[in-house]
Length: 364
Image 1 (cartoon, one colour):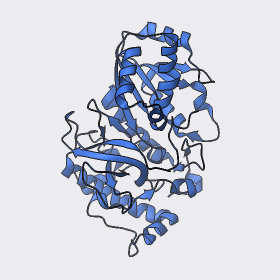
Image 2 (cartoon, helix red, strand yellow):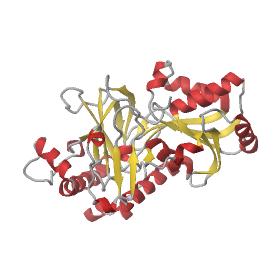
Image 3 (cartoon, one colour):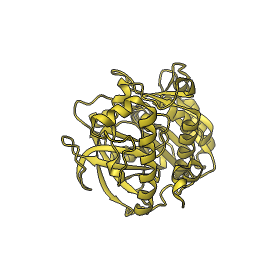
Image 4 (cartoon, helix red, strand yellow):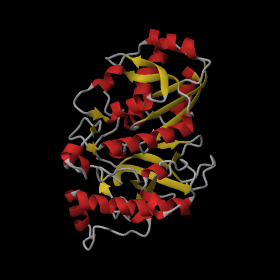
């Protein structure tokens, strides 16, 4: 592969989702993230000032030798500043985080950025779902996607995932209550097929699984797959961990393969899917670093710290390297028992006293 291919979206968007080893991925991301750092320093004045403040004063090029050295932007800065590397008239879509306390992150996309993020999301999810659309049960209300004041992260997630399904059934009404007759009819029609179920974690738990339990209803699905995401804060408050969540899903619904995922509006299109061994996996277009919560020094595998997420995708705003407020542990690279290449990790909650954010944590 030629160096120029690293910045050619038509080329790198076709990479195998988990198919590059560490050395190959390092070569791609080093070149791409260097280019993005230079691009955003040139086109986003606030980002250029940030680089100056952290010591990258001599050149906006910030020529990194390893992807772990990319200077990250703190996630909460997207709430305080309109960070964008495009002109106002080029804004194609405005994305907002789902936080209900304080300000929301605002992410500016031009048409090319939105297209690339969509392509990568599709390619990633096709790895898990296949290319054929499945009958889809959406654990949310149709009204969630009808907000005209900019698309929230939750609405964007629902819309993005809905492309992978057909004959959609929304399990909840506008008051977020179970539409039991519609759900029963959908499952009766498709229970022998590979149903795709999607929802945000706490909503799936409280508004769907617990509602079924209260009604004494169980189903016997065959070869269904549930993909869920969003914060675990409220789940932890109810002492519900990943194992318990999966057990209750299977108890109520039958043969369902359950996969959590991690993602954020600040890096739309980049998602970290959970494999059958409980690990979140970096696709080829992204990488993660774990840093000490006080010194921000990079930690070794097996040590818990702040998660930094790097992505090859954001070109319309400086979101290619973000320091989150989430705690994580990296377990390894290229050697997960599931066989997928790339780093794999687990999440361990949020930094104490950090702002609440997340698609299902914000539902009340």
